[in-house]
Length: 304
Image (cartoon, rainbow, N blue to C red; front, side, top):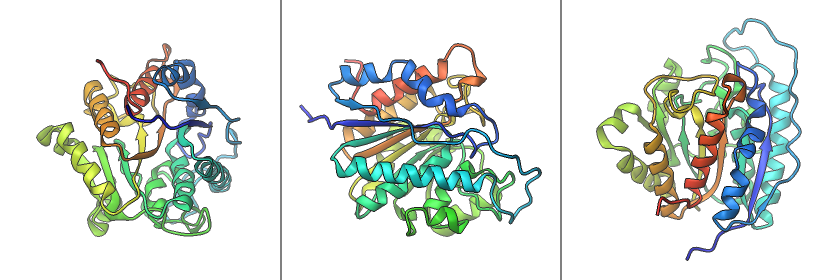
């Protein structure tokens, strides 16, 4: 039987990196859906520190103009620096960091903290989008669409240098799964940097099992292990309606569970985060319940 690591569930109630508010309620909604109970039933010891301090209000900057400063840059830098420090502390105490967002901009802090501890880490990034924009290419200026680029050392210097160094990850160890809405600048960056991107086209053709196995191979080649960054909008909105940037034609319920079950079986996952659950966009907490189920699959829950 595999030894279960001690978990630290880190809540980051931040939504200023996104265009729609409400995702700051995501971490508590996922916990209210029974996440901690599920993990304890799987044999994990869980600690639940106070949430990472995160502002919920800031002055809107009006219409975004490309090449301008990203929206809410100061707030995003502050929360990601705090998260990076907390991740580093959790790892130094030998615990597994499980991050609950919040919008996907918080991945900048997660990866900054991981990169201060590990020599090299791979990333599997489940998302309908690539999050590879920069202030020059972003149509919105929202930082949640820049987080993967920033972690690769590309973009605004205040985002790329969180933690005091760059890059946090390498393109050859980065895999995107589930993409189906890519901006022109993101497509160019994927090709230029050689980032592996399994769009829904590849999932349809290859099947989610083969895609996941190939993703693990790429993300673990020469690294200490991998981080799973899971944006709930990678799923089809019929399965996960409570998210701010839904895109039709996404990963199905069973595809998502199978992918995460296979990641657990691979034995290479060092950390994980679940982001973009927005309870304000639905009434019955369906998406938060699904997020709790998916995290459980990633950490060992099985049908039999």
